[in-house]
Structures are given as structure tokens and as C-alpha cells.
Image (cartoon, rainbow, N blue to C red; front, top):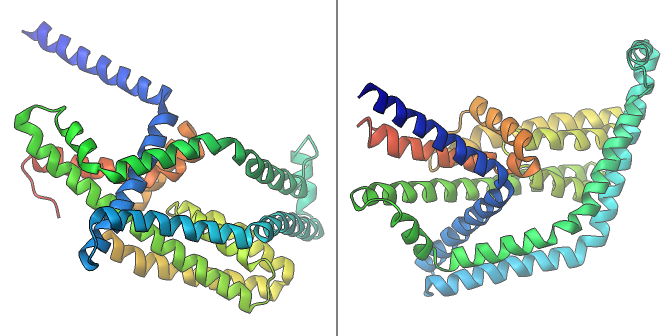
Length: 339
């Protein structure tokens, strides 16, 4: 009996290790599918909300939502694409200028001499900033090569959003009949949490993007539109995204002048605190309260394993794991209730 229990445990470990290896090997595909599921859940929630408040069916509400998003995106790109790309290029140049100013200031303090002694290859802050800007521009140019993945993502999203019950029912039928009610409840909880997280991130993106753009515009900074768009996009990544957005915003501000840079830095800190202490807690009441340390750890881990895609999808993946553990283990296995 002892040998049988040891054999079962060994089989379980080997099975788990095999599944993890397969997940790692096809991780990019799984992340693409999960991204489609996430967007489909958001579209489904938007369509259901519209159908509940307007005299239209869910199907027509979904069609209207998709066409509305396409129209807004097409109009935005058509009107601002050329100017936006130019401003993004100028943002990279301003970051390099700021790095040069910082290097000159550190040289006056005698700090750069110590740094140059430590760097045998003769690298400098300006060189590092130039390389960073070059990598960013290269990434932007090679984004055209991701067109196939984007098309697949769009097609998967539309199919999943059109008939979510079909795919959800297929997933439920994979488990024994006695456990299907539990799985159905867990999937409903996951969909609810993802939907509210998705809406919450869109609200955060809009808040930071609009306020940052408006503030920079009032300060007379020419690159306000590109910085607003960049901030909104990076805000989709909780915690780390807004911190990354701080670099180009503050750099451009200080290039305009020390006083302008300090105003931009102080204003951005205030806006971030409002978003983090007011908006995010309101959203987390409807979704899942993500512990910052846990989320950042998962973001770092997934970014190391899967790159940028892992960093972007770390938060919703963490939500799925937390809800699944709460429902399947804490509530239905341990018999405890969760808040």
C-alpha cells in the first residue's frame, strides 16, 4: 500500500511536470488564446450591459460594440497616425537629450569619472539612452511583423464573444458530472472578476491618459499627445506600467526646463495616487483584491519566461489563479467561506 501511494504521488508529480513543460513550449500560443478570452469577456460584458439598458438583443449589442470600437480606432489612426509616430520619435530624442543633461550634471559633480572607471567598455548614460531609444524604435518598426498574431487574436476574440456558452459548455463537459456545478460556478466567478478588471483597467487608462495629456498641454509641451497615448497604453499593466511611463514624461518635462520638470513630476505623482488610492480600490471591490507584492512577483516571473506578453497578461492570469484557488480549494475542498 505504501508503494502504491508513492507510485501515485510520483505519477502526479511527473504529470504536473509534463503539463508545465508543454505549457512552457506552447506558452506564446496559450497567451494568445488567453488574450482573446480576456477581450471576449470584456466585449461580452459590454454587450450584456448595453442589451439590458437598450431595446436590442445581446447579439446586436455585440455587433454595435465591435463596429463602434473599429470606427473609433480607424478614425483615431486616420487622423493622428502620422503626427503620433512623429511625436513618438521626438519623445525618444528628448529622452536622449535628458540623459545627456544628466550626464553633464553628474560630470560636474565628479560622479561620471567613477562610473567611467567602473565601465571598461567606455559606455555612458547617453549611449545607454541612445541604445534604449534605438531599441524602442526597432520594436516599433518590427511590430508590423506581428500582424499575423493580431489577425488571429481578432478572429479568436470574435468567435469567443459571439457564442461564449458554446465554448464554456465544452469546457464544463470535460469534467465528471458530479463536479460540473462547481466548475460552472468557478467559471462564472472568473468571468465576473476578469470583466470588472478589464473595465477597471480601461477606466484607469482613460483617467491617466486624459489627465496627463491635459496637464502637459496646459504646460505648453508639444509632445503632450504622444505622451498621453503612451501613458494610457502602459497603464494597462498594473503597477509597473505607470512607473515605466514616468521615465519619458519626466524626461521631456526636464528637457523643457527644471521648473517644468518638477511640475510634471509632482503632477504625475498626484494623478497616480488618485488612480491608485481611489479608482483601483473601487474596482477591486467588484473584481479581486490583488496584493501588490504578489502581482509584481508574477509580473517579473512571467516577463522573464514569456517576455512582454507575459508582463502584459500577468495581472489577469493572477486573477484567474486566485479565483480558481478560492472556489475550488478554499470553498469546495476546505469548506471555508471567502470574502
